[in-house]
Image (cartoon, rainbow, N blue to C red; front, side, top):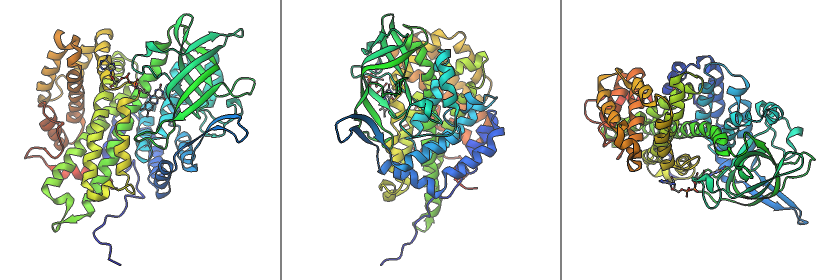
Length: 536
Ligand SMILES: Cc1cc2nc3c(=O)[nH]c(=O)nc-3n(C[C@H](O)[C@H](O)[C@H](O)COP(=O)(O)OP(=O)(O)OC[C@H]3O[C@@H](n4cnc5c(N)ncnc54)[C@H](O)[C@@H]3O)c2cc1C
């Protein structure tokens, strides 16, 4: 038997919070330092070997659909491996599905964002029902009666995976169904019908082409009622204790996100209650969309962080050509460049989360304009980061026993889900037009911060001018510049000078983004790579 040599130890156990300098600084800066104790405990729990293994198990033993029992009765149940329930239980116990609503206080959305940022690094599938439940709360509040009944269950931290009526459970989770076979971006094409029933509820007839986490206790669903497209809450069980008429037709065979079930469903007169004003379904459910889009940024920034932490860890232990990989100058450049991208994503995501804790004009503009912008850019960058980080591990990065293939397969989903890239960019144009003072508020975020921002701020200003702002073909360019400018403003104000130098030198001249490892001479690459190490 050969001797195993020159192989790095696994990056476990480790604390995902205390070892992440950029995250800890962002949490303090954005107003959630009070949560550091809880986040440190969560970071340790997530980084334990047992939890890491659950992430692997939940993706290896994927959910199974049981449509019928052995006698032919409908079941429409999805069975998950125990690891899935343990991970989801951990997330719910930490309040990641609802804590800012259950216990609102300054910094609550930031603290929760830091928690989910860590959760998604270990297992991204469970993040899906966590994100949808979090996002459902402002929409459910449009129906005070429903909110009174459901919010206490949603606020509970006592995860209950049993498939029984929600009123018999210790906690409830919420999913959503918008996308239909004929269209997911253009929701006005939804064909599912809602018929009013004598008791004031509705019966839904139709289908959804994607409905993830179908074992949630209820779903926010769009359907055409007599007054137009409306939003409904559709529970898995009827008030009389019978199963609701929701048939799960099949589970999607997905590229990644494999621990999570995403289903195709048919509604055969399913019981549902109206949420918000009849005929105003899209504005009602879009409130949920804002929060789930924030979660796409958090989830993707977390994937980047995990990829970079693994890459730096590997390179600090593996030797090639008589030196640690991290000490080979070209590898140091790759690691530093990856670390800069990850830190920029972390900083912007946490700044965005703070806008959900505040309510002044700046916060409203950041929420409305920067959320879709950040979702576009951060989610777009994630596949590149996970791919390059995988290569740092060489052949071992391509092997399923490492987490890298899972991160890579997961990386595109947040860009597609909850509004794909183009839809996000078109939404930014719309938001710029419809949000009072949007361009001025954004200019102020950039103005006078640092001389290096002048070039990108000028370019953005030109784009805010008439032509680009109304030319859809240029929307991606405008949104890219907006995000780069916001990231540069954050890093030049708050990150170590060398990180800000590297970002400005490589990202603001319009030709960044082609590959990693292209940082110019004169930057302290080693310090940047060391800062990203998951040590301490
Ligand atoms: C893993 C996963 C889980 C999901 N879970 C859910 C869920 O739980 N609930 C749910 O409702 N949906 C869910 N979805 C569906 C998802 O939200 C949709 O796939 C997404 O919104 C895109 O819709 P579509 O697939 O119909 O693509 P289309 O609407 O056909 O769009 C295709 C492409 O065209 C682009 N495009 C569309 N219109 C324009 C335009 N005017 N200009 C330029 N480009 C345009 C889009 O950006 C996109 O890139 C899930 C998807 C995935 C992959």
